[in-house]
Structure formats: structure tokens, C-alpha cells
Length: 249
Image 1 (cartoon, rainbow, N blue to C red):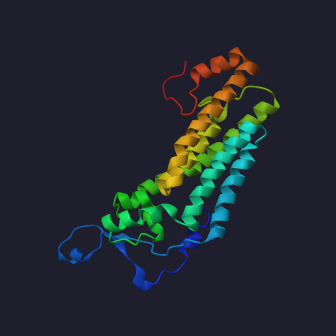
Image 2 (cartoon, one colour):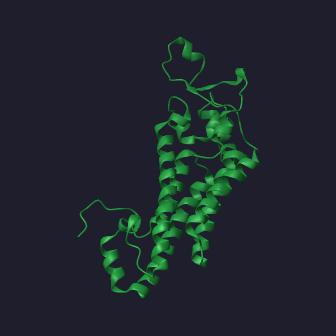
Image 3 (cartoon, rainbow, N blue to C red):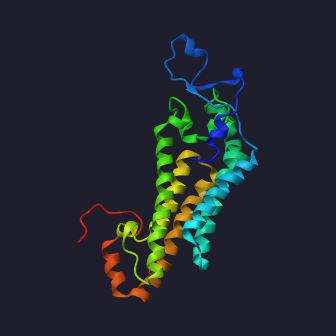
């Protein structure tokens, strides 16, 4: 899910450059493998797309987190680093694909390693039929990113009014989890990992999740000082990051 996806799809690919996953001369002699259309337009080195996508997601997060403390800025900075690393490979230089090009050539000789669709690595690895953008996994990743953005925005609104009134945020998303904004960041990052995995983002994801857990512990310590037993009662029935469907007492 990126702003210029329509820009990329509008580019023309030479008629003689269309290739398919699992297509080979053997397919004309009874091979039943399924052809997978590949987008052979590389669409790399387009750094303005890196800039546009990065700015969009970072500004969106900035506008709905309104960082005020050093902890807030660390949270936003970690998310921003993930976003820049992602789009730098998606539209700038495909470092991960470059490092994997030899392996791809040996195990998937029928594809062009530097075709843009090859970046949808799970689609290639699982040999899914059809275009990558219609793959159920890709659609699920889009849903994760979209829901994460909505959750981030809605959570900020609830937290803003609670902080303004100096009360404990327990409504909206906060009725289901104690740290919905961190949950939103994790959903967005996971969605992008399912959509376009890279070595840097795969390495960064568990580190950032750990960082968000540590930041959440810091916030809870401050909330216990400010709200005392009220926060303890709230925390006793509200999970930290993922809602529980069991009956809440």
C-alpha cells in the first residue's frame, strides 16, 4: 500500500519483456505449472517516490502522535527509520533483491530478479498464481496497513482528550488494549513485511517491537504514579497490545 502504486502500474512495459513465474519450454509439453504474470518494469532508482511515500507515512504518524517527550520522539523515530528503509528498497535501490539475485537465479530461473514484482517476495517464494497485487496475502497486508493507520488516528483522538482533561484513557481503542498506538505501529510494519520484505526491515521489526514494549512499560510506570489504583484496575482487565475475546470481568 503506497501512494504511487498507480504511477508504477501506468508505466509501459515492452511487449517482448513479459515473463511469467513457472513458465518454461516444458510448459508446452504437458507441464501443468501455473503461469504467473510478472511486472518486468524495474521501477527502481525513482527516489522521488521514496521521498513521497516516506513523507506521507511519517507525517501521518507525526500528526496523530504529536510527540512531546523524548520517549515519544524515540517511538516516532524508530517507525520513521523502518518506513525509510522500506521505501528505499521498494523504489530506490533493491539491496535485498541484489543480495538474493544469485539464489533467485538458481531456484527461480524463469523470473527476472530485478522485475519490480519480484520484490513481493512471499508471492514468489510460495509460487502463488496470478499477479502479486491480487494475492490474498498482499490483500491482507493492505488491510493490516489501512486498519493500523485508522487505529493510530482514532487512538490519538481518545488520548488527546484524556490528557487534556487529565483523566485515564479507557474508551475507544483503549477499552480493548492499553497501548493501541503501539499496536497500530506494529500492524503497519507487519503489513509492509508481508507485502515487501527486505533484510533491513526484517531485522528491524523485532527490535522495534521490543522497543515499543519497553516504552509501554515506561508509560505504565508513569500512569501508575499518576492514577494509582485506578490504573491497576484498568490494567487488570485490559490487555497490553492485543485484545482478548474472553469475557472481561
